[in-house]
Length: 180
Image (tube, rainbow, N blue to C red):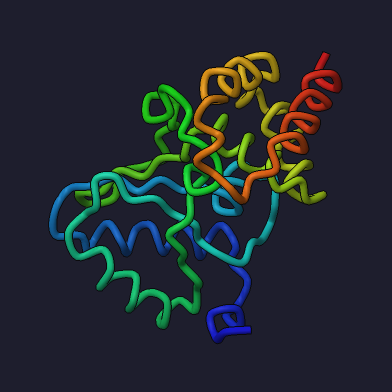
């Protein structure tokens, strides 16, 4: 286990401090997409998480210097991790990525809830499945639309050799059934 895992758990207040500090330190405009536990914190799905998982697109200038300093001063773990590393990016993901706030020159968004849901279904952990159900319950994800988006990227799944497509499809279809 590496030292980053020894950092303290992250709550919403600490996450908000991180976002504001990144925005103050950024030297150029950019966009930061939050995903995973950070999204769950801000939506009230969880009270704590371990990591701040982000995607930068476009990358704000000075963000890596800010992250290096904030990891130490706030005692947080930051990872470049987003659903499109595990499943194909869904068509229209940028447009569906919900705005959170602007701090300084940086816009913060939730990474597309549909992409997050598909990625979580691909892993299939109990906490991930509960998160997907919470996204549905908060009307951030509609099961039938998630299935339609999955079908749109089906041909790209071969580019993700670690992905167990039959398991993902089984979990997705079960989620659609549970959502009826």
